Length: 409
View (cartoon, helix red, strand yellow):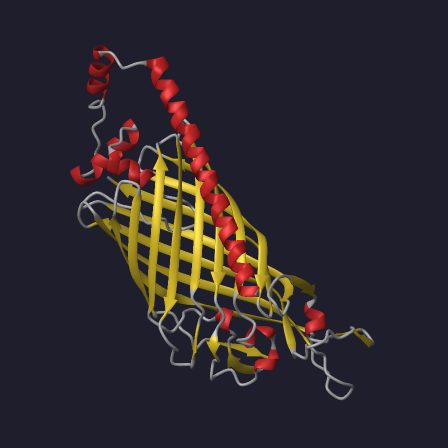
């Protein structure tokens, strides 16, 4: 019953999103028709003037790149250029097409901050907030906190930040196929609170911290144009990230918890379907994506599969400054198996594979600025509006993303 209700909730979200997109598309089409009626067709004189002005700028770049610089500065796009422009959303990688032989390179910095703990109910229909001190049964002063039923962990996380540096390159292989390469560098920081012990065992501090960082998994994707509006992509994630990271706890070196590992340890298969519409002044789209983890890794566990839907709207002004809004729905499955190198899963909720899997809905607002040189800078802030977890997990508070991209047309 719980699974059915969750599926219905997700379906309701999807219906609302696509209804919103359809409504926006209809309104925009009506505005364009009205505008054409008022403006009429351009005169031959105007067309001639535009043709002459298109050659006023001579770039110092090589020919293959200067074409892109001129196109950005003149703000003249054909259908393929427009396709690129409409699909550079800040917070996600939107799968789209590039002209044959063209490149786009980019860098994104993403920071997700988690603070506090929530516990999902048995039917996974809601959460209750639980303090880290209660989870770890930490003594405050001379009297312990009232314990919470079902908890007897040695420690619990207070907060955590996950910083990701993403480097990406896209290449137009031919008219209908583009390729993407992406690699990540992760930095994880977690602060913990722990039991202070009994009268004969006193620790130096009730607080500790742990960090891991390094190269994560590498993604290779092929994007195929199904039509002007639809793109289908298939790819794989190669396990270049470590799943054997260790941390120091009370002077002992132990296996880091699942959330602080750098990779999945498995070859993962990726799939997505993307829809886009609109023009350079107002555009919208939606993307469905799915990640399948293939079997258990060398440490004996496999991460849950991930299903995600994104829908966005963007308004671009005459100075090429744009404002965008995005809704993101994520369903992450539970971890199957357990990490054989974690000796004691009762150390903390983060060491326990049962505390994994969630439903989350996020809403985002973004800003970006396109420059005549072909560069684009962006910022997006994302906030969960709903999150339901399995077991006991950290609560996501916000995520922000900074992005830079350069498009060679």
